[in-house]
Image (tube, rainbow, N blue to C red):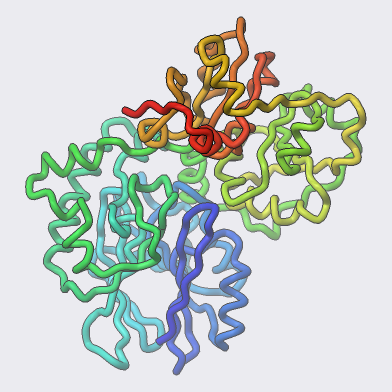
Length: 462
């Protein structure tokens, strides 16, 4: 048996290839939309991708299951659990629909599906057995049920898909899942669907795998004996739900468009940019942060390329309108791939930086020392998560997470300067560009909270 691990750092998302070397058959578990790494790994290992399986309908990225099946002819293995509202609309005669206890094989590798509702109603865990070496499972692909140090959050149906009154039931389902898994052998390897940084849980660990025995000992989810205590713990202090999650649930349920059917964005001339902005389209300026600060077109949004480019973009994308980029030509393919990963498919074109013209404006930055010197007259806007804010913030800072700012502009003053602030200055520059577009007097705190702490300035904690 062969097992390979793939990890998308920007989405904190893990996927897996499992193959039987004797027969050359392989299965991909929870693939990303960019299937290039799986195709390359299959070539490198001289195996064929014959099966594709998903643990659940994902909320945080566009699934690559349909894409892989279309390109390789692989058979899809999808959940049939969860009731009529949670069935895959694109399932066809090349799809096997799985129920609790169903088993199948990929050459010498055996799989068993366990229904584990809670994170989502249709969620499955896959037990895996190397039948050439053993007669019982070696581990599991736990999807978004069980993570290192955490379990999947049960509130996304409410906060992302607008299914009211479901989070308590989801939490109770997760409690029953935990009780069920307490009875399974400690030696089982746990291969989760996400790592630290994912919004699908509240305290995911950074290591890529664990054992069930270790989680029984140290995962907080396994320490609650009463259902009521577990539910209260699980629902408390979950992170803010990213704005794009609802769209991901809809897309992955219906079936994502195939990448071959999407038109690549075309280079556009600068005079079109003003028309695009007047039409209300989102224009993401994806140049380096310092270039945006030095001069940018009013109305554009600064999102600096980096590990979280697509997740930050997902807070502002209107999926009913086109999105445009400002970026160097050699960066466009990578940026488009990252945006496609969260379903931004309407990307008509991009503007190379030399097309921006000369009517540019600057974005002010201020040092921590300057802000501290006039703290009483400055409105500090902390755009980090609720948890980050609670762990330490600038005294009297007003807290609005990045994805909520556009809907809460009426909370912000127009009679004094606003200084935006995050951990390092990346998210807060995006926030500052948004506020500048809405006519606020705004500056970005250089270095964010890191710079504030380095200057040994006072911090409040909750």
